[in-house]
Image (cartoon, rainbow over all chains, first blue to last red; front, top):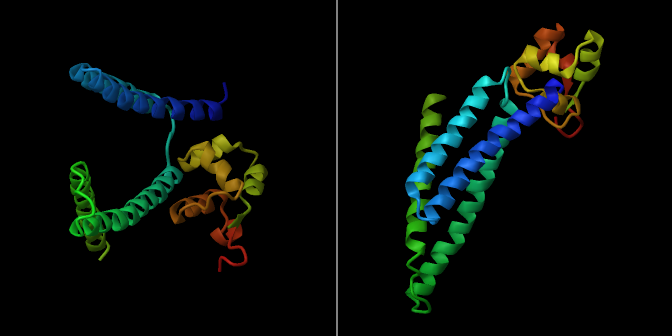
Length: 131
Length: 67
């Protein structure tokens, strides 16, 4: 097997193992085995880290970082736009007594607020670091 | 951004994998740069410039509209 196909295979193995860890955690929690879920998450995560460590050469580099930056920016943009429509819209409809405030929306609102807080904090930290 | 990385690498007689190893990046990144699908960071461009012993401007140039 050539080096390049090995690199590609190892990247898939690494990402696949992390994917498996997340899926097994979620599915075992839903199935009623939270401890087994946590154990599976740790095991697959460790396997991913071992495969990463044992690979001779870089598996990820600046191109992956750039990709992640772009994806994060897009995700935050979509989330920001959605929040800017959904939350004020729902609040207005609630204020007009057209709908009841959906109970499930509150934790999402708190999550978005928390994420925004972390994002702004992170931006301030970067600005400070670059001064 | 256009570049002459493939030409320079072939002149050196090395594979993408070997160049990737020299630059401490993945082979896929070297391939993406050669296909002009990815513009490297300033750090990587300088590393390439040092490796090929050529100024960055000889390796990379902006296309019309990118200026």
